[in-house]
Length: 420
Ligand SMILES: N[C@@H](CCC(=O)N[C@@H](CS)C(=O)NCC(=O)O)C(=O)O
Image 1 (tube, rainbow, N blue to C red):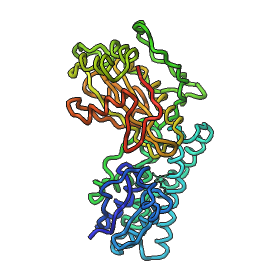
Image 2 (image 1 turned 120 degrees about the vertical axis):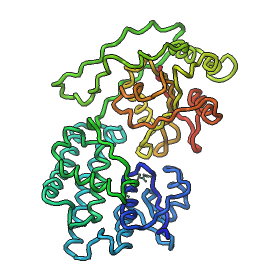
Image 3 (image 1 turned 180 degrees about the horizontal axis):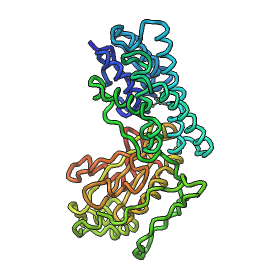
């Protein structure tokens, strides 16, 4: 029998912690049949049960309700007294609390703040970024030293402290724990790999996405006011990637990844669809209606040589002011500069302050989006879904994103940007 419904979203590491504890203990939790984050958690019926309006939140089958990750995880673990998750010895129990607190408050909190700084959810401040990184590293060092002589944090078996630490490191893997930093933490890595690959929890966590380079803030370049060009822009000379000065004080403010020398996209068979002509058509014509750029598009599009994509920001729940979200799109487009020959984009912010999403459509050279967008170091902050223009829903989405009248779950388009 299920313990109840856990409100969470698939990418939420805190939710994974609770689901992993339940899976390890052999307990069943349901996920809500439908839950739209930042929509449903603001509804009076959700707030009546969970007044803080945040997820994770557990709506128990017996009517019991509890929110806050740590409290839910404890509650779930305590329902399986033989699972090893919460030792009965009071000293061991205190040590489990200790390591949960280290993982959450000495590592997880700082990783979350770094994530928010780099993604402009908080105003970027380099000294704060450095300080938060140092603090997270201090926490990781304490855990690393402790794990040098132990398999698990407290006992010879997996406790809730181990699952908590693994869920925190799982998230840090894509934010601060880059290839260089990981060298300092072999035991933390080994421990996390052990927990997330445990047969009972493997499906909950999925593979860890270790980053090569830590997430960095990249200052958005000021947007130029775009005038609709009357004539074709002169073909751009091939730009040499900007060299990043090794000793630049602010060298984390510019992209570190240089575009590849030989772009495989140039080796694709020639296409009849001319992206430059399309960009001109889009700039010079109304989008919808007879004689509009969509009509031009359907007449000229070559679906062998190009593909059409839906793009969604993965961290919508961290968006606050819509103008900041708009800056985020501007920054992403700036970092896609090296793919200008291969890409067109129309993306926007939908919704309102503290309740918005970033979404849109891309037209990309080839059938694979990765080589087109991976020139932007933050391309993994977005999800990409190929659209089938024969499918009515996909087509409607594509057209609305281009016409800047897209609406998602009641959220209306408030600001848009084009990558041309
Ligand atoms: N202290 C909470 C934090 C959870 C949290 O920040 N949840 C975010 C999503 S990751 C949320 O639900 N935000 C909704 C809101 O801020 O309105 C916990 O540990 O459970």
